[in-house]
Length: 420
Image (cartoon, rainbow, N blue to C red; front, side):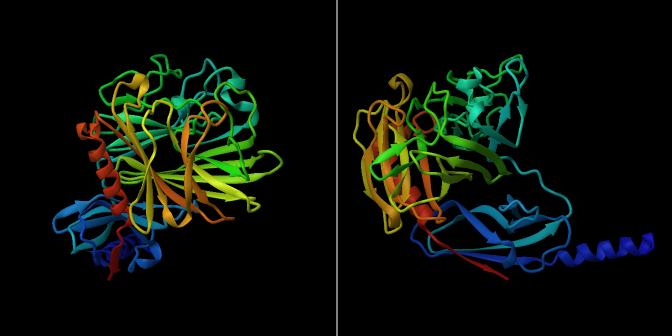
């Protein structure tokens, strides 16, 4: 094919790909939906262009930030994702077209993950890592990971996972909507430094986790016994043979992380545990999906809510047929300096009540929800953190409770999606 013919065919291809696809979103609820996640599978979209292309989703003359996500790691995108605002009992019609050129949308989600390969080496950004049982930080004698492991955030709040063997989840309170600096947790000389427990322009780490599993961290109850997935603070031995972390997607409107715990051996059992963390804009929360294999039938999944600085009891709210909320509200930050509401939003169909871990031990200072779990059947829930410096209304327990209930209702609402 000569060059002129090739250019003509390329122009013809993109002209044909300009044919717009119509996406009709219908909200049948009597509830305004704000930043509602919209997921459309690749197979549900007609007229897909060949080769690399970028989605252009339009609401009249306004472009809606959207991204294509490869969820199974095969190198091809699986899902079109964006968030939309829908009035109660309303229909929103959007158009989808394709472009050779990507659009740099403002980031409303982000992931930060860094590591140093030696005590005296600088931190470098990474997208995945493997942690062997012999490499936990208490045994190494130094912390290899920036912020103790990966952190993720949206325009409201941030979180982090202790990927150093402890496997707890912590909370970054934000006072700004922009993404926090990439060098949080790095010293002026490029090393690992705990510089995020002091107030910065963007906010700070506000939650004392200790030997809890933090906010939304997990454990298994086996019969009547609990063994931590990994180590407690200071331990040099872990019961997880190998852990992996991988950034699946970091995009303007959704970021996704995978954690795998390979050959976790509590008592005389061996389990494989997977977590997929997702975050999108507008909510003071993240989503977590947990999958466990190797189950023998007497296990219960525990989803934790740290209570080390909480003087108030745990509150349970049955929101609707889909979700139950467990929440606390108190001055439960470091040194009880600020008001903070914490919650987990759990699927009601597998909810089996709640409890509390002891005040001491390798799994302690934690309220938890108990969830039924079965072999290779994932469980999805949400963890919520609402700091008074993010929204002064969160000083009020009723305001916080109303927010969490509304969020659960938003998550419950189903949007009808028609693609033409």
